[in-house]
Image (cartoon, rainbow, N blue to C red; front, side, top):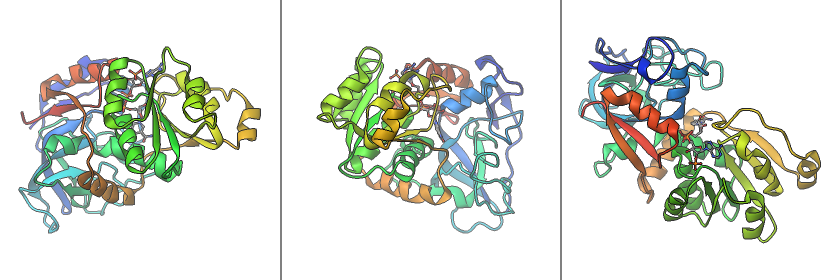
Length: 346
Ligand SMILES: NC(=O)c1ccc[n+]([C@@H]2O[C@H](COP(=O)([O-])OP(=O)(O)OC[C@H]3O[C@@H](n4cnc5c(N)ncnc54)[C@H](OP(=O)(O)O)[C@@H]3O)[C@@H](O)[C@H]2O)c1
């Protein structure tokens, strides 16, 4: 098969479009013909060599968000069959010992992730456990399914399972045009929350309003804290959902209301941050929470919500497999709204 693979870390030029052996399924695995694979920032972070999950090895085929059609099944698989259209849960916790992906956990240090520790969807074929595929409804374009796994599960886990966002609460969501935040805005609205969305351009703010955001602000030119206080009648927000990191940390803290929770799931602009006022934190009874990957039992319910809901899918651009490096460069540039996809089989 063809794959976009790298043997050493570095710039996008290290990704090579090469022939590699077709993957063989274990007894409980399936082989998916990859029809769409969404990019994530971690793809570029690991390729650059800035950070890698434990278990990452070279050579590596990235691609955590895989959707396509099953073309082969292992001897012990009877839950799905060749011809089924599926989306893949990339988190490899709880995998049967007979899988080629056996032995991974779901906590940092032992994480196993299709496309991050194990080979993923930047390829014509991808082998995954049958336990980790979910049926894509006939009415759903396969590209829409590929936008779902990492973006929606990251947002859902952080906002609901970690920060406890509930109906009637207010949530501030930064980088409204990122794949994770496009999902977060819609999930929060779906759950009955009021959404304050920020981004770095008017074009992205306009799109955020179309997705359902109630209030928007340019976070490069606007006063984030003053705006948050104004639109909440002085109360402050219940939750800040953040993956921008350093750049917006202090105004995010000061935007929290009584009992407010800042949940962090990323550090795109930088890893270091200083709590701007301990007094503010304890007087407000505020919390800072970290959110890692989701737990195994979260994928199925979230996928059902996505299939049954009226979510808007934002696909910025599709690239052929041999342009994976260019696709990653566009992602890192920030000139993107929603997800970028690779189409390994045309
Ligand atoms: N914890 C987990 O399990 C998990 C899983 C998936 C992703 N993540 C993390 O979540 C983040 C989002 O990933 P993604 O792929 O959806 O999007 P992304 O490509 O990382 O989003 C980048 C956006 O961040 C904003 N940004 C960057 N620098 C900024 C600055 N100095 N000030 C304000 N905004 C800035 C920009 O938005 P504007 O153009 O609007 O300014 C940019 O478009 C990443 O950090 C990723 O590593 C974590």
